[in-house]
Length: 99
Image 1 (cartoon, rainbow, N blue to C red):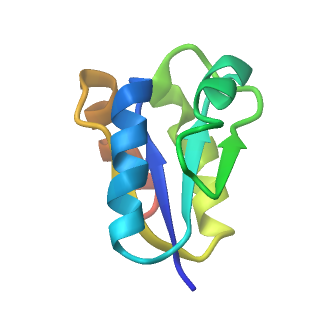
Image 2 (cartoon, one colour; image 1 turned 120 degrees about the vertical axis):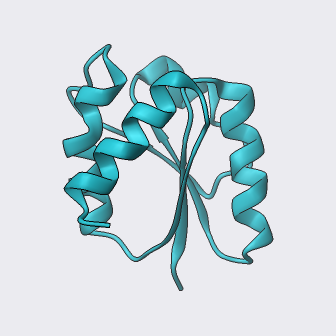
């Protein structure tokens, strides 16, 4: 079954995106860029929280690592929070994933 992957630099918004992912009746995974983010998302309702290793403080520079993670997964939907950093990340992800 395809998984919904969610990311937002705003933890409250990431929780909402996990809820959105649940509406697709598929597993939902949250992506975290730091151990603190992963801990904060631990009770978000996500089936799993994936920590991007060696993540940069600049969210956009993590797009390549996240794209590699998504390429090796059964992706159904990728939902990114519509914050300034989220929009930048989403555009870069689309480029790396050729979509």
